[in-house]
Every structure is written in structure tokens, then in C-alpha cells.
Length: 326
Image: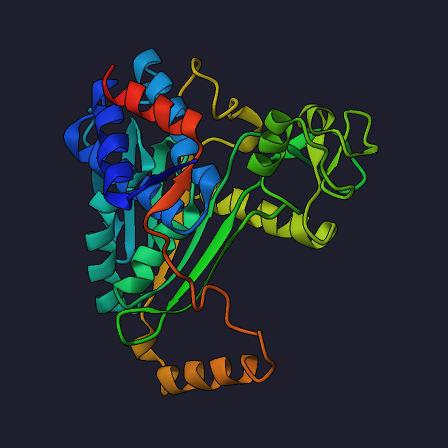
């Protein structure tokens, strides 16, 4: 293991992206997200993804030099066309407009279309909360989830993220979770490591429970809580695809494939101004106290510590430095 500072992670990730065709702004936005993922221990969305970004920049599957187009058809509705580029710069272009709308109207929506995978959805809702708004986010992905009782993959892991400001520039709570029992990345990492997965995570191609990650990838993942999680996954599909003009999960190609059609994904965010609610801060403080009555209990996202430096596998860091010097 190599001990790498967050600054070095961000600088190296940005250099790798620029070396493979990303513009400076897009590379900086993606590298900042990679940094945050590594700092919070979200390795699936950190350096683990950079090689894929670079391959897809070279193949043209993601456009690294496009300028997102921001429009607002009506007050409170902000739309960003990512132009088949990265989600991070598209969000950055649209966020100030959406924040202004939410401050004026109390509620606003920010939809992103024709985007690459956003990877960590909570990274975006956290940005909304740190600006003082409640942020709710939805996205979809390539199909890997069948309806309860079925075996045909219909939707993706379709995450939902929720971030709440504490009124003091921080977070009162945050969660970011797939609507499946586990994220697909956990299964692909288990396959790479030659490990089995717990029963209850996935089904094989015939609809039977499996502990084999390869069979799971060829089969389908299980919705969290069965039909309840399935409903949330469909909700994310409606908002992230139908409401953005994005692509239904059924037609999204494998996200890490080096070549192929652009991801063409959508992300949908709601921004809610808590200052419109009486005693919001006091209510949140009381809620946090209620949750923390038992030792070890806490609000989601509370007491997170950011690691710096972080431990990175030697082979992965070697790969990053090679990509940066390509």
C-alpha cells in the first residue's frame, strides 16, 4: 500500500484526464470528485474509476472538451445538456442557476441530460446542502435489476441521495444509496478479488439466489427490501430518465466498457430552501438528539472523518501515475 495525500490524488487524477483528452475545467471537476470519494473511503467511485474515464475519453465514449448548455424553460426548472460529457462539470454549470431559483421560489429542480455516469450521487447533493439547501438526487444506470418475481433486467441500481444542511455551513445528515441491496461495484470488486458474495445480494440468470459474483453479473441484483426497494428504483428511473430526457436503464450500455455508445444518462435534483419552514433548525437539532440517545447511534453522514493521506494499492497508484504521464 502507498500512502498518498489527497492533493496528490487530485493532481494526478486531473493530469491523467487531461492527458487522455479532457479539457482543464472538466478534468478539475472530475478530479475533485475522485478526491472526495477517496477521502471518505468510497473507493468504488474514486481512483478505481479513473482508468475507465481515460479509456472512454480516448475512444470518444465520453466527450472531454464540450461546454454544458444551461437553460430554464420556466421559473424553478433548470435544465443542463451535458453534451455527452462528464456529469460533474454539467452539474457545476447548472448549480448556481438552480440555487438562485430555489432561493427565490423556495423549491427548484435541476435536471442533467446526455451525461456520463455521475459515480457518487451524494457528492452532488452534498454540494447543494453546503450551499444551504436540502438536496435530493436521483440517477439511473445500465440494467441489472429485475422486477420481484422476474429475471429480466429492467432498471439499474438507480441510487437516491439526500443531504440536509445544518445551518452552520455543514451537514445535518446525508445518505447516498443504491436502491438495490448492494451497489454493483461491490460485486465487480468481489469478482476481481476472487471472492464470493453474501446470499441475498443477487440472482443468477435463471432467477436463483447466488453467491458467485460472475453469476450475479450475468443475472440480476436484488432490490433492497424486495418490492419496496423496487418501487424506489422505479421512482429514480422516472425522475432520472423520463424527466430529464435521458435514457431508460434498459438501453444504457455497460458503464465501464472502454468503447461503445455514450452513457447518455440523466440526473435529477430537487433543491428545497429550508428557510421557508418555521423552526427548521430547531427541529433538526431535536431530531439529531432523539437519534443520538443510544450510544453509537447517529444521524446518517454525521461524524464522518476525511482521511488524508489515504492508503492506495501500489498497483493502482502505479497505474494512475502511468495514466498521468501518457
